[in-house]
Amino acid sequence: MRLYRNLVFASVDALNEIFNEEKQADKVLKGTLKRDKRWGARDRGFIAETVYDIVRWKRLYAEIADVKAPYSRQDLFRIFAVWATLRGIEIPADWKQFEPIPTRRIKGKFDELSKIRKFRESIPDWLDELGEKALGKQWDKELAALNQQAPVVLRANALRTTPKDLRNNLADLEIDTTLVDGHPDAVQLVERKNVFTTPIFKEGHFEVQDASSQKVAHFLDVKPGMRVVDTCAGAGGKTLHLAALMENKGQIIALDIYEGKLKELKRRAKRARAHNIEPRVIDSTKVFKKLYGTADRVLIDAPCSGLGTIKRSPDIKWKLEESFLEKVMRRQAQLLESYSKILKPGGKMVYATCSILPRENQEQVRNFLATPEGADFTLVKDEKVSPAKSGYDGFYMALLEKKKEEKK
Ligand SMILES: C[S@@+](CC[C@H](N)C(=O)[O-])C[C@H]1O[C@@H](n2cnc3c(N)ncnc32)[C@H](O)[C@@H]1O
Image (cartoon, rainbow, N blue to C red; front, side, top):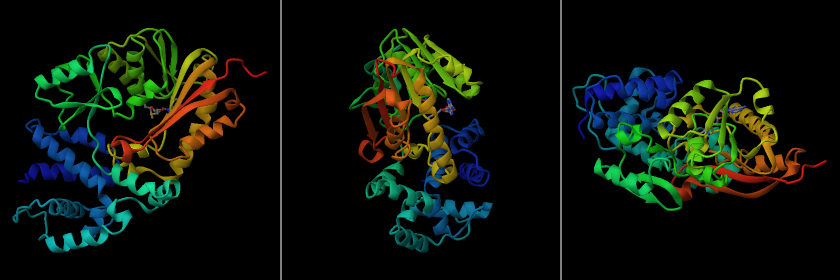
C-alpha cells in the first residue's frame, strides 16, 4: 500500500483531536472527511480505518512507540509509524515528520507485549480488572471480540421494502450483501461501503443498525394499534423499527431528555415514512408522569456504559470512567422505577442496554423486581447477547410483564 502525505496528516490531526482534546471519534471523523472534496471513497476509507485502528490499539501502539499522553505531534507520528510497520506498510524515507523506523524493535516489542492481555487487547487496567471480575474467563473472549471491527448491518424498513428487494436494489449499485440468520430485517454488507449516499437510503428503505440492536424491538412484542412509549428514544434507532413492526398503526410516544436527539428522530421518521411517532422532550417530570398507567408497551433502552459497542466505538475504552459507570447504574435503577409506572396493568416492558456487564443488566432487573414498583412485575424472559458468540454488539434485553390486577 502506498501512503499519501495529505491522508496521513489528516489522520494524525484527527488522532490529535480524539486523544488530546477528548473529542468523540465518530464526530471528529465526520469533520475530517469533509475537509477535502477531492478525496474519493478509497481516501476516505483509508482515513476512517486508520484512525479507528489506532484508536482501538492506542495502549499497545503507544507502549511500543514509547510515548505517553498527552501526545505531541511527534508522538502521534511515532504511533502512526507503529501502525504502519505492523501492517507491513512502508513510510517513504524522505518524510521529515518520521524518524528512521526501527522495524525489528517494533515487531519484537509487539511480540513481547502480546503476551500480556491489557496490552494485547489494549485496555485500561481498571476496565480489564472490572471485566474479569464481572465475567471471569469469558472476559478474554468478549474483549477479543470487541476489538474486531464491526460488520455493517442494515435494517430493511418494512414500511418501504423487504430484505429481498433491498438486497436486489443494493446489488444493482454493486453492493453485495447477505441475510443474517435469526435477524429477519437485517441485511449485511459483504464489504464496507458508504451506503448513505444511495438514493434508496434517502428514500428511507433502510437504516444502519447493528444486528443485536435489531433484536430489541422484536423482543417488545408490539402489535399494530398499540400505544407504545419509547422512554429513552434518542435519535430513534429502535423507535423507527417499532413503527415498522406496528405497520404505522397505533401510537409511539418517543421520549428523551435531549431535544436535539428527538429532532434527528423526526428527520429520520420522515425519511422512513413512519407516521405514528410522537416525540416529546422530557423537560419536567410532568411529561412522563401524565403517561402513568396508559401504555400497552414500554421500552427502556437505558443509558449505559456502552461496553457492548466497543467494536463500533473503540474510543469508549479510553473515555469511560469508573465514576460514570456508577452514576449511570444509579440512573438505570431510577428509570426502571419511574418509567415502569407508564405501563397499564397487563402490559409488557423491555429493559435493554448495549452493555455486557451483569451489574447494568440482569442484576439491575433483579434489583428492580425486589422494589415496591417491581413487585407488580414478572420477568418473562431475558437475553444476553455476547459479542464473542454473535459477532455483533453486546446487548442485554429483559421482557417484563405487569400483573393484570394492580396491587392494593
Ligand atoms: C442507549 S441511548 C438510546 C438509543 C436509542 N433508543 C436508539 O435506539 O437509537 C439512551 C438514551 O437515553 C437518554 N436519556 C438519558 N437520561 C434519560 C432520562 N432520564 N429519561 C429519558 N431519556 C434519557 C439519552 O439521551 C439517550 O438518548
